[in-house]
Image (cartoon, rainbow, N blue to C red; front, top):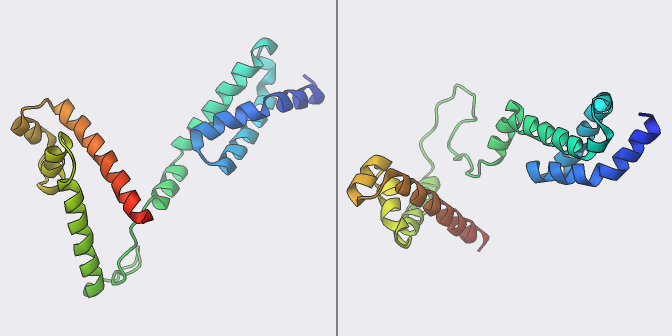
Length: 179
């Protein structure tokens, strides 16, 4: 395949490959980078693919590039740090230092109590069948097996109800933050 043929191939499938990458990573900038990586890999290996299957092959290469990217330790570590939404208390020493924390800031203690009370009210306000399961799990810190036995439900049902309760709570918390 000549450079001109490959350039035409890129033009033809660039949007498709970008869309595949965007569906995986949900970040336009990373998707652009992965699209370029896909075509770089394709350029070096295009001889191995039958021209009738270029489209499918490029989609598979893109998907594999995205999966590799998402599995990388760097991405998992950086995304985990980016998703931490709670600020570090003001009285705490910087992470990674050998300093011991000072006495807790009274303002931080009041905020923690208010947040805890608000979360407690949200959990207790969940509709059934999620309310009892959530109270036992989040507030009483009981394991799933104990909850299942106490409520006479299969553990898989309790797990499912906890998953849904978490989703409802997450939506309610996000709604409160926007207000």
